[in-house]
Image (cartoon, rainbow, N blue to C red):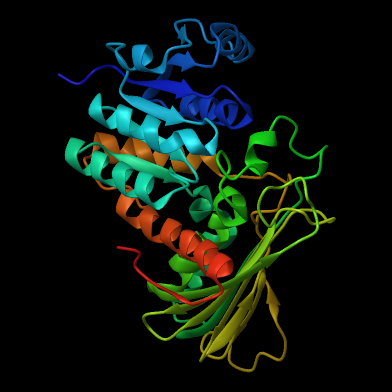
Length: 342
């Protein structure tokens, strides 16, 4: 007999964990039953802030995984911990939401993929922009053949990481705990490009640079990506810009063009003389950190209840991460890198 609800455990009680809790609270099939932090006090503060009554607090992650009514783990810790915590969750038979990036090294990425495969649990990697209204509309326009076959694409992550923007995220500036510009942030752009191009990358050439020496890595990186279907793509990841957050999407097809909220279609709107505006919420709308967590969490829960594979499962997410890692290798070694990295 199925339990009354799916119990959710949160590890890493920071800002994003609070958003995950809000989304799971609104889903009728889930209940947050555990929170784990570096200290119990930090976990307890989040529990109290969210008004969670029947919720255990932990400072020992493996102890939390032993909780009997725990079914899903939401991994919201710093980047370097995601893979290890995901592997432990899989071994404990728990489904999981792993915040991006799922891993910051190729070895740990493949180890996590193998751990999830062996355990046969559901794992969703946190590329929540797949549920952004703008990206969903663009995808539906492509399915309606509004712009035909895409031959060139640009998707860029444009942000800042100055002191006042993300307090408490100093770990993200370090190679050992953050990874790189693409792994910290630009992986959202790479994942969106893969999804919208609808093909897998076969080669990456990248260059990096920047001015902010508070990063151990170059905070600005540009990748040129060759896809299996012949499409060429360009992706910028910069987390040192002095500007409001922006997420740029440009798709050029043989029947039309999409530039963010603007559509020019030879097939759907004959006689069109200028771009048509698409009024909708985009990744940068409402708030500089707007993210559609609710449909993401609802999707994971639906996949667990109905035994379906998540849209961004671990094998799919590995392909996005490998592009990011290939870009970092290319920039460091000044050479093109073939994909996949196996």
